[in-house]
Amino acid sequence: MLLSPLAGRAQTKPAPAKPAAKPAATPAAAPALAADGSVPAPVPLALAPVTPAADPNALKIKAYLNPISHKLTVRCDAVGPTRIEINDKEGRPVLTKNTLVGTTPVVLDITSLPAGPYVVRCTAGVKSGMRRVMLGE
Image (tube, rainbow, N blue to C red; front, side, top):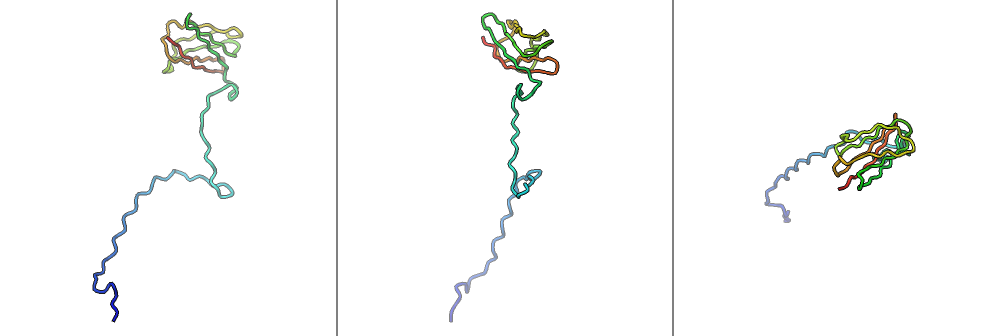
């Protein structure tokens, strides 16, 4: 007589399955499929600085610092009434000058400004542009 290897042993129930882990958050909307059934590549959202080549309303600005005389020379390609504004690192205007800009550069006295980063912004009509400058000690 042949005995089964399980003869005489108590049969046990299999262990209950572990609860499934919570699914990860799913995106709000699945990407649409292309005509061939493939998923199109995402479009990167890179913000480039506004340049005259990219925006016809952007002004070209050049700023030259003379640390000896504490003068800032600003040139821009605007013609006519132009507002030149120097903003501090928080974006607050610390020096403003309304002038007629042409081929002659504008010289600003910056002796009252402490050292640090600033933004020179020029606005002429609908056109505007900016340039970062660092005033040294």
